[in-house]
Length: 374
Image 1 (cartoon, rainbow, N blue to C red):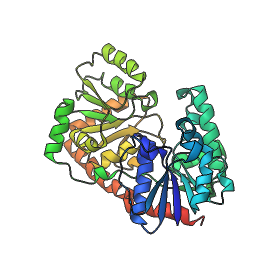
Image 2: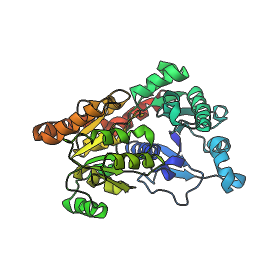
Image 3: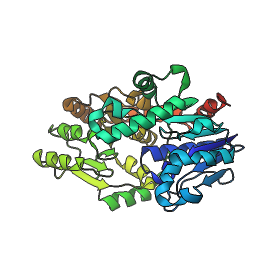
Image 4: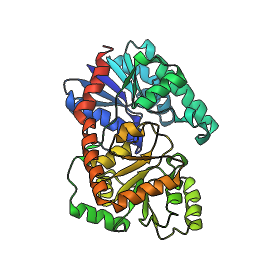
C-alpha cells in the first residue's frame, strides 16, 4: 500500500499531537516496511528530527505557489489534494483531527485520528474562536473519513455522543510510548539531569503544559496538609496560568517546596521520571494521558484522576482520586510515599499494564483499520 500522513505536527509539534504523529509513522514504517509512506508537511526547515524508516518514507512539501510561506497552510487544508492525486495514495491518514477539504473527490481512502473533544466537554477552557475553528475542522474530518481512529474508549464515546458518529465506523487504537523509554537509564544520566535542574533528592512530579485543565492547583491545595512533606517539581511550558499557581504558592507558603523547571528535552524524560518518587497528574480531562503511561514504563507510581480516559491508560497500576478533592489527593500522596511495599506493588503492576501498549500491538491495530477500507 501507499499511505500518506498529515505530518506537520510530526515535524513541528513537541506536545501530545506531535508525539503521536511521530510514533505512528515510526511504528508503521518499521513494522510494515513493504508499504510506501508519504509524509506531507508545509515545510522542513527547523523540523524535529525523529526516527522513521528512510527507505520507505518520502517527505512531500508544497510546490509552486503553495511553497510561498503564507500559502503553505492553504496547501495543507485543501491544496494538498492535488499532491495526493499525483502520488496515487491508497490511504491518507489525518493524524490530528483533520482531513483536507476536497479529499473525498481524490479517489483516496481516508482515516482520521480523533484525540479528544475537550472543547465541547469543557468549552470554558477555550476562547470562542478556537471553539468555532475546532468544531468546523473536527466535524468535517470525522464526517468524511472512511474510518475514524479514537485514541481511547472515552474519545469514542464522545464522538458518538457529541458529533453523532456511528459506532461501527470507529476503531479504538491506543497510543504507545517513545523509543527513548525503552533503553535502561544509567546513574550517570540521572545525575546529569538532577544537577542540570537542581532537583531535590525526593520529589513528586508533574510533566505537562502548565495550563488550567491540567489542574496543578489541586496538588498545591493537597500540599497544605502538613503530612505532605515531599516537594513538587513542575515540568512543562508555562502559560498565564502559571501566575495563578505562583499566587497560590505564596499564599500557602510553599515557596521552598515547589520547583518550576520549564521545558524538558525528550531524551531527559526517562531520567526525570526515574528520579521522581511519584507522578501526580490530576488533569480534568484528556484524550489518553500519555505521561501516565510513560511513568508506568519508567517504574514511577502514578496518582491521576477518576473518570475520563485515565483508567484506560493507568489500568490497575495507578491510584485514582477526584480531580476536585485535595484531601483525597493528599491521602493518596501520604500513603504511597510512606509505604514502600505499596509503592513497589504499584511499580510492578505498572510494568505489567504497560506491556499492553507494545509497538507490535499498536502497529497491528493501525494496520487492521487500514485493511478495513482497502
